[in-house]
Each structure stands twice: as C-alpha cells, then as structure tokens.
Amino acid sequence: MHTNIDADEIAKFDAIAARWWDPGGEFKPLHAINPLRLDYVDKRAPLKGRTVLDIGCGGGLMAEAMAARGAKVTGIDLSEGALKVARLHLKESGRQVEYLHISAEALAAERPASFDVITCLEMLEHVPDPASVIRAIAAMLKPGGEAVFSTLNRTPKAFAMAIVGGEYLLRLIPAGTHEYAKFIRPSELEAWARETGLQHRHSTGLHYNPLTRGYRMGPGLDVNYFMHFSKPAGDPGA
Image: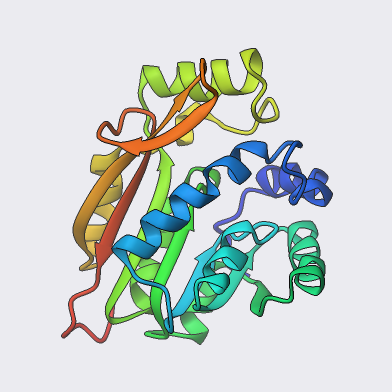
C-alpha cells in the first residue's frame, strides 16, 4: 500500500465510524452540507450515466448520493471501519456502490484513465502529501474527465471558524478533527493540479452561519472552498 497515509488520521475516523449515518452525531455537518456539495458536483460535472470515483468516501454519504443521481460509483477509503459501515448501509438503501480499501495512488496504478468524474471532498487536508493524491486523480481521469475538490483554506479565519469555532465552541465536529498546518491554500491546490495538466474551471466557497446554523455556497474562499478542474480531451495520460 502507498505510504501517503497518516495512521493517526485513520484511527480518528475508525473510532467514530459506526456513527457515519447518524444525522445528529459527529458527522452532522456532513449530513447538512451533502445536498449542497452533491448539487455543486452534479452541476459542474453531471453525474447521470458517468463512471465516478469518490476518494475518501468514509461511510458513503456522498457516494450513495451520487449513485442516486444515476452515476456508477466507486468509493475508496483507508478506514476499514468506515468502509464496513458503508457496505452495510447499502443493504438498507439498495444503492449500488463499489467500495474498496485502497489508496488513490495504488488505484491509479490499477485503473489509469478509468473515470469520468472524481470527487475528493474534505480529504486532502488529512494526508501527508496532498499533491500525490492530485497526481493520482489526474492519472485516473479519462481524457475530458472532471475532478471536484473541497478542503479548508489556511487562513486565520479558517482557524477561527473551523477549529476554534467548529471543534471547541460550537462543537460541530469532534475536537482534533483538523490540523491547521494541513489546511491548503487555493493557490497551492491550483498549482498542484496545473502541474498534472488539469485545468481550473470554477471555484466557490462554502459558508456557515452560526446564527441560523445553516450553510450556503457562494463567493469567498477564505474558509471552506470547492474547486472544479477538467482534464484536456486530448490528454490520455497524467
């Protein structure tokens, strides 16, 4: 298995994996933003009838949602606990998703140029080498394929909102979920993607209102943000 793994990160998610599908539990924010991120992906990279890979799929919230939109979905994660929950939930939902315990880099070696759409949401900030994941994504996209990322910007506001506010004051997510040093500036993500030949198409922010406890998508990338890229149609490799 590829070495781009943080064992402590995997352990954190394994410890709470059983509660992935509890909308009132530790993953409540993911349940809340899932419709927004699903609509963003489907608008930027239409899902119906396409072969889709969800990297860092966890318990399957996004993978199942994309399958419901008509995509043929593969989800990968390095948390055995999360994948077990994801597979069990398929028995309740009746959806069809292929779940694999494998890294993006290892899958890229097995399935180059295999996917129309790849999503990598709230995942890059949890690995030691995010650029390695982006290289793997570029290799796995078919010519003309599309990738959507979401992550956290490395700004004082993101530290205040995501860590101080989200983890300790509002307790939206478990304390210790994020490490500020691993947050990624949009310029860094765009540069890593450009080095692989991916072309930037769109960016938007995800914003939380602590008064209404609601989320919305819109301009401003200073905390959570999404970026959409495409692989040139004439590019068979990464």
